[in-house]
Length: 225
Image 1 (cartoon, rainbow, N blue to C red):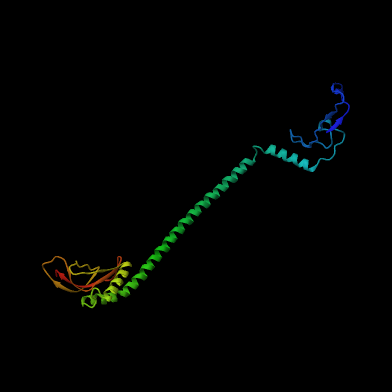
Image 2 (cartoon, rainbow, N blue to C red):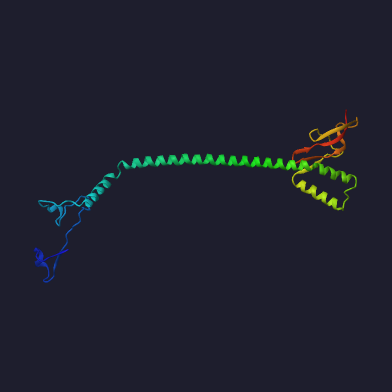
């Protein structure tokens, strides 16, 4: 901002009031982005020689021109192609993740099923090893050695309850229909008054864990020849 003491309009200015004028010294034209020459005078007032242009001003003008020329230019298709490529990669990775998750779930189920089978097999071996003990308990009951109310009766009852909680069941009783899948016939009595073979004598009861037969019942049968 400079103060000018002489101007053609000084006659219209009140006496004693200073006159001020403003000079636009911006080096980049805000209207078209062009670089103005250095100096106090605008480019339209040109002089015989121009001072060198500031490199920063020149770069700003170049960026302005590139931005103006790039609007609606070839960058949009390039960006669209890149977006499509990234979307394709996201889709492929998503499908791969789903396949790996399904494979993990199936693998976990196989491992759990195998562990359950191994557990049942181990429990079955323990229960099968205790069957002779249960035979002795049953014989003691039949001979009156384990009478109700005695300590041995309480111990035997607790043992059978614990083994039953692991799926052990006893089967085989007089009057049941003979089933070769569950019973082993050690003797047979012919009888014409019955249509199917039935158990007439139980020598040893059978034991099963859930649906698995640990030992068939050893019985005597009575029925058609």
